[in-house]
Image (tube, rainbow, N blue to C red):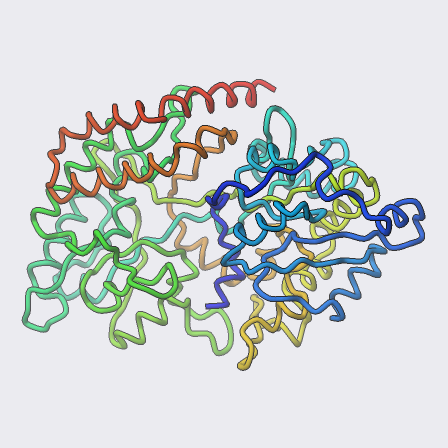
Length: 521
């Protein structure tokens, strides 16, 4: 599913193991070559580069490399690490005293700061050398600056995930709704329950067997959203100006009581425990494809897009997978159910994406910092430059069809565009340019967009890294046991206390102290 990688789905910082070793503030130190380049401005500035999604080893002799090096009088030593083993591979390099000049940050920022991998970046420098970029962040969501702050200092350049402005999609089997006599797409919890009961009891697939269910795990967060928030793991919620954990809010007890009722009535697939995605791309739902459930919600609008936007286009990847399994099946985009108090909302990644950091090795050379920021600014001011460094070469990597860009696939190499340098130097996307390039796609996205619950943007704290794994595990296990009736609904109260006693209270203390400093600046 290479096409989906253009969607830049980075929902936040990746959880990873602790760094293997501790570096000094000077990192790997400056080489004599880089020092010489810094002393003589006529020589290209040399940059060790890891600020990209490393899907493949890029060719340093490609046209894109040559164009960027000439434009910025720079020479790039591009690091390649397997994106599937990113943290393991970069941590080995860090432990050996090797650090790049600039990198994507897929760890918690405090951890990188403590290990001497990140240098703080002056806001004055950002606004001097990348003013358009800074203005876009200010206007799109100024709180993004808070995602890269630690102890009052900026340690990275925040990035915008355009797709994170769209909630996850809720998708119904429209042919099943038609079969059981429902002509209106369900909107309230009561209407959802009616549809799910009919899916279970009225043989919507017409095979004469009672082997269909209403929903599975992908739709559960939408039900939680009808009670105020799609609690998951260690998600935060903002209440009365304070950050709280969503998982322990009393509204979730009401939601779990309803889900337990639906489970007893066999409206929820008992296999939801292992998940409706049993392999392949994360947004796939084999249970939905294979006539087991009639409601899913794990993917995005572009995954389930059921309308063409260009010549030869037939829809999104997951929609096509569904049609392959069910050629006569139909889908309909739904809305998150409205709960008893009028609340409603879908899970939403939020617009904060993978930030880009500067290491101490780069920070000690003003030319390096200036070059990095100037490159970033170019991606936000020059559409043609943006298209080249982000999408690749027109006619080779992409073409324009109607009002959208279409990737030109290489039948022999799924990573050909990346090898030619696409996405290596873009660092991050200007959302205005992204919508311009894919205007047809985002027009469709806007047409099916619903209300979402974006994540609370909060400061990074060390205690969250320390406790989040166990707290997330506790939340998932308890919610599952309550839904299937292995624990009574009232056990939620004991769970909430255990959650807070085992690190939750410490995290909230730390994050609220940091949050008050942050919002008070």
